[in-house]
Length: 437
Ligand SMILES: [Zn+2]
Ligand SMILES: [Zn+2]
Image (tube, rainbow, N blue to C red; front, side, top):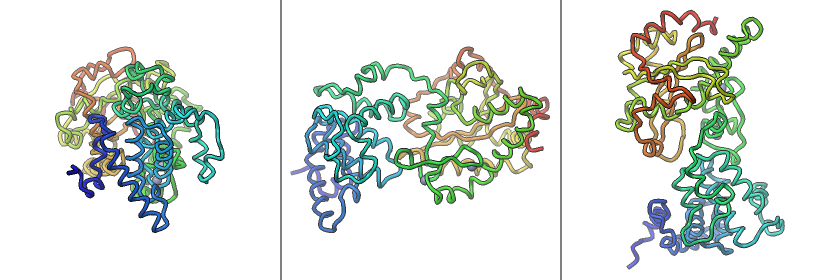
C-alpha cells in the first residue's frame, strides 16, 4: 500500500523528501506529479491558472524535479510556472524564487538554451519573464549570490548546487567551485542593508515588489501605500524622532564639522551590523541556552568613534566594552540614560518587543534581543535585533564573542558593569540630549 494517503500528500508530506537533511527528492516525485496533474485538471475546469492558484504545489514539484536531476521540457516548464506563480502570489518567497532560478539556469545549460528566444515566451505577458531568459537568468543569479552570499541558508544552496552523480552546476563553477562556501564571508555594511531591505509590513522583497524608503526616517522600506499606512500607527513616533534628529544635526554641519561627522556616522552605523561580530546580540545574552533572555535582559555596548578605521560604515565605531543586564535591575539607569520619564522604560520595552515580534523574518520562530548602543557625545540608541531560530542553531555559543567585535584590535574584552553605566550618565550626559534642543 502506498505510504501516502491523498490528505498526507496535500499536507505537504512529499516535500519532506526534498529537505536538505533528507534529500531524496526522486521518491517524492510520483506523488507530487499526481497532485499537480489533479490540480491542473481541477483548475482548468474552473478556468483558473493552476500555478497562480496553488503556487506552493508547483514550487515543490519543480524543486523535486530539479533536485532529482530532471532537465527535460517538463522540468523547465514547471520551474517557469512555479516562478511565475510565486512572483504573483507571495510577497515573501524571494528565497524560493532564487533557488528555482538557480535550477532553471542549470536546465537552460543542459538544453543548450543560450540565447534569447522571444517566441518561446510568447504566452508570458509579464515583464519578469524578460529576466528569466537563459542568458539573463544565469547572470542574474550569479550576481545575486555574489552580492548576497548569506541570503540563502548554505545547506539549501549546497543542496541546489552540489548534486552527487549529476552534471556540475555552471553557477557553482562561476562562483569559484565548492570552496566558495568555505570562504569566510565578511559582511559589509552594504550587504547587511541589502539583506534588511524588505517591506516592513508584509516582508515583500525586490524584484517581486517595488520598495520605497520612508521619507521621514529613511530607515523603513514599504512596497505600497497600504503597507505604509498599516505600519504608521507604530512607526510614527520612531519616524518623527529620527527625522527630528536629522534636522537637528544640520546645526553642526558648519559650526562643528567633527561633531557633525560623528553624529552622521552614528545615525548610519547604529542600524547596521554590530561591528565585525554581528552575532554579538546572540552570544551576549546566551540566547542559545535560553531564547527568552532577549526579553528580560538588555545588552549595553559602549562604542568609540573611529572615523578613519575603514571605508566600510561597519567600522566607523568600535565596541569598547559590553555588558548584559537584567532590565529590571537597571531600569532607573536605562530611563535616565535615554532621557525618559520614570515608568517610561517599561512601556518602551514592551513596545519594542511587540514591534520586534511583528516583523516578518522568515517562516520560522524568531526571538528578539534588546540592546543599547552608547557613545560619548551622541544620542544613545535602543533597539532590538530579531534572531530567527535557524540563526540560533547555526551559531553555537562563542564565549569569546567580545574578542571578535572589532576589525583589528580585540578591545571589547572589558566587561561593562553597572558602575560604568552610572558613571557614563554623569560624565557624558550633557551631549546626549542636544538633538532635541
Ligand atoms: Zn508591503
Ligand atoms: Zn519612517
